[in-house]
Image (tube, rainbow, N blue to C red; front, side, top):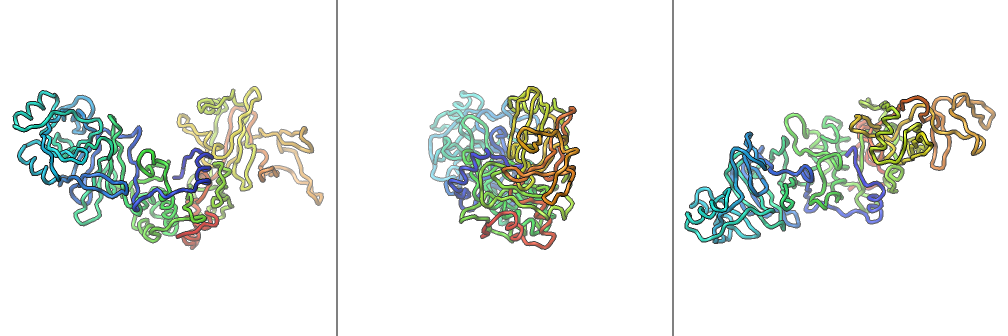
Length: 543
């Protein structure tokens, strides 16, 4: 969550006015692993700890309802239709070396349980059980043509019908084969799910190079691909977040503070509710890869930090807080209202003396753009501006973080942005450039400095002096500050002449909430996770 993205003031306004209802039900979290543009035609699972799977669905209370089972250790869940076996053995939507057809020979008899249907299937080699809207049926196979399915039904001497695979159906196979184990189709009213069997242990299952605890749910968009959702106990979810949001080798008190933040965040998360899950597994929410793999994952220390804080969350006024965090603040955190536009009493900026006590990789950064590059970045982001001639920091917050940045084009037209946009507006994946934090200066001088009145200006602080109340004369070199309506503002922060704009800053992230590196520094100084949380979040309760 180091780069948490919101609809700025709009979302914060909703949270402030309405509070936030807990999203997690039955202490169970739904994590979107693949969805939307990353949804899958076919998804593979393989037991890492345990053996076999139970088929079913999750009810409204996130309780698993069993409707079938298999002892196989490697299975694939695929969108029903014509399924081709590619040269690598994986399933494709186009031509391959073999296929699982879309036509079904379905026996007319219904069964009261999976066991009854599975027993009947033993009499018909190649057949499988299908769970169809609360009814168990026997399907004799999956055929490429309707005629082949009709022939199969006739040859078996069974009454029944021939059907085409539904646009909401799901097929379970033995991975890399055409052996169908099970079908599920509730016409979209329920989503197919799998619960791995731990065989007396806590089950762990491979999916896409990482191991996960809990079960898996596969909503299918009608006629489309499958989303893959990990349905997992909240504490196991937090254990799968910590080592990817903070190094598992850090002091346990820092990890414990991170655990409380991660648990608090997910306990109120509703961001992806319209998609059927609570949080995704990326920095858009919190990075999550379950039990990891051979090169990364939870450590004994990170797991113990979760256990140490089990169930604990942060509250303000009896409600879960928005426990945002980031990598490093560069010297001071910031008020949420100055970054996202909504005033949250527990997210207040404060000077941070702790980060300076540790060595932080990349803590200070320098980024240089040509003015042509800035013009291109702004115009490609949809801003109406001509060729950029000047850019400067036009206001700082009382904490010394950037509050406003102004761009001036060759016709004198200006564009001013504020809050988190002051850093994100510079981002370009094409150029591979960004401004890492809200704590920066821009080399040169583009801001007009007023003296005496509103019409007299100077181009820079060079050669300028200030007279104190005691008559002392001091040159305005280096970091000079003036008072503005919103607090102190640094002078001499802008770019005018030349073709390049150089930005120098410190820290990484949005500066709101807890600094992860600051948490490490505090832990190394002997502070507890409670001390850390009470420092970075104002007047919060922990229970």
